Length: 267
View 1 (spheres, rainbow, N blue to C red):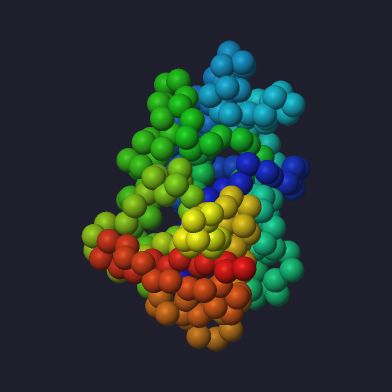
View 2 (cartoon, rainbow, N blue to C red):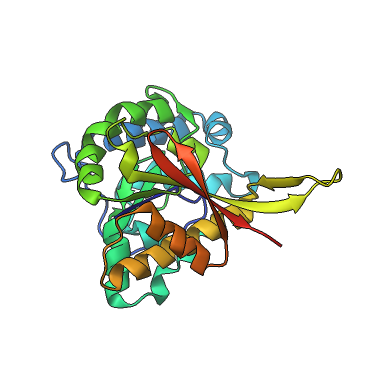
């Protein structure tokens, strides 16, 4: 099983791991690309900080800190990706409260998509940084398009071996990689929606940012715990069952040649 997650802008600071290895022949196959992006981002932040802050969508009150982190990213201490990211989704996933075996499963099955790093394994060390996939960086261009050209070769063997891929990414990060026609049957895209009644009496289902992220984190946690429980997860039905255990109404949707799921919170 693989769980495809978006990153979060919120991150835990510090870390006690060594700086990230971005050698061209590193084990990820992305070392050269990561060095190119991180070097370009650092130069951008150093040379024209105001333009960089705007391009990277850095919040005004903390822009100086984020710029400094981006400039120093290649030399900063690291921690595993599932520990570094700390937004709503990752708070709900809450790897720190998992058992040792479950934590190991999360580290092995989670893939976090990243504007700075392309894709990160859950246990892969990463420094603090703030580089959204929607940004455009001088000398590199749009990061979504940059990574789209490079991720297929890296992800293909992992997706082919996984059996089940649960796609919980947001729109920006889903655009970085899409399964091929031959992979779609194994990939289950999941949305988390809220159901409300409109003024005209009709029923409306739509994503709401906080609850969507929270629900995806809860589902990722439930799938990690289920997969570690002794029976590998192999099908969309088991993902649907996990959603129902969390209290959602589950609706199957068409997703290319495969099946997607909407997890609907009904008041």
